[in-house]
Length: 239
Image (tube, rainbow, N blue to C red; front, side):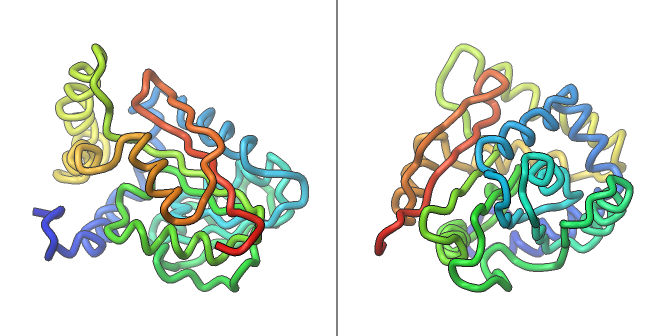
């Protein structure tokens, strides 16, 4: 029902992430065997150049924002529309000692950021939850400087392969069970496999990025193809 044309998926997603914020980091570690930290680090190193200004969209508990600072960013703004997630992110940023990170409530489709003002737009495990993805990509294009870089780390819909049935079984059965036990939320981790099934394959996401005006530079498949990193560039000339 959440993926019907008239469904208010954004409201559900905001409430869901607010409800699981306290256990979000623990569930990521359990689901990925701790690999999610390495993937965020890889994304940051693939995108960030020394001195960059970075916008982390759907920043949540700020893991990607902090990875971008470690990769050399001079300043990172992390935005998310689920306030409880940001509260955990602020606590993490304080404990890390990084001062060049700011976290605020905002929607990916209405960014409170000036045109052509950031060097990097990035997100981790966010874009499949955005109902109006093309609007969010247009916003990314707007806020990036010419030559700026975009990075999307996400769980794509898997293309046919011998591993696909095993991945689907894991997402559809193991993840919801562990999620319910750890987070206490009955539907959040049932939503995850459904959102993956309704998302794009890596080639389809690359096509959407190209249609939004980006030049796709790299598509890396991680964790046997269950995670993908797209790196793209905003053309230096007129769109």
